[in-house]
Image (cartoon, rainbow, N blue to C red; front, side):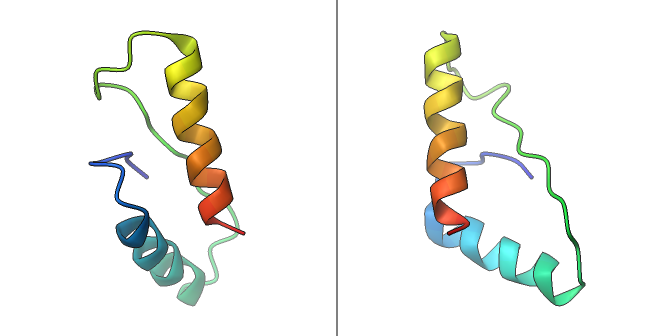
Length: 53
């Protein structure tokens, strides 16, 4: 699943769509979004994981 513009509402909608299909795993892509440090990528991943809760 792409980071896209970082819109958490969009993430939630996409996640719900995948859940409806009984998907049990997702990958999350932060590449190509201009993050220039590992910390920036990890922050985006943390935001995404918090959206799953």
